[in-house]
Image 1 (cartoon, rainbow, N blue to C red):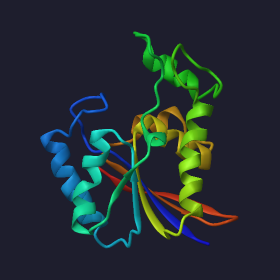
Image 2: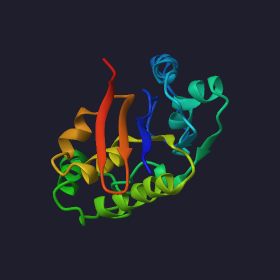
Image 3: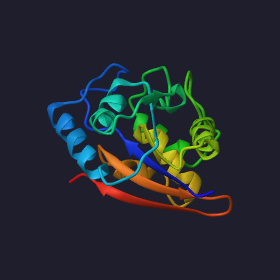
Image 4: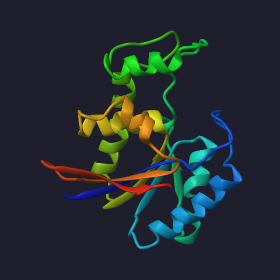
Length: 182
């Protein structure tokens, strides 16, 4: 059975904390996102429990009378629980070595497995077309799963918000970027 999953990176936020809200620009982006998605038939919305992800899809959900389900498997990946001044270099290394894991953090392999469980649940659900709202680090790993040529640079090039359309069947998938916030 063919499924469509719209993979959305949240709009511009005030910070990285789970309760960080959207900026004023982010709130406007969420409204534009709702307009952009308005022509799409969507059966289900699943989001990271982080406030910025929920607020990103809320205008669309309200306009279409859809419930936003939260799923902790879509929360952002934790690179480490200790401060790392060279965190960007450390992050880049995790795109080369998917088993690399820093103190208190999650490896790329673990984070990929986590988001793929959500994708597989959506594939097995009755919903033909779903929206999944998450975070850049996690989404970039999903992109890598389907396209091994993507990695750290794909993460760096993600915008807030960003949308990819994943069409998936038993033996085929097609992934395309359908939004790039200017």
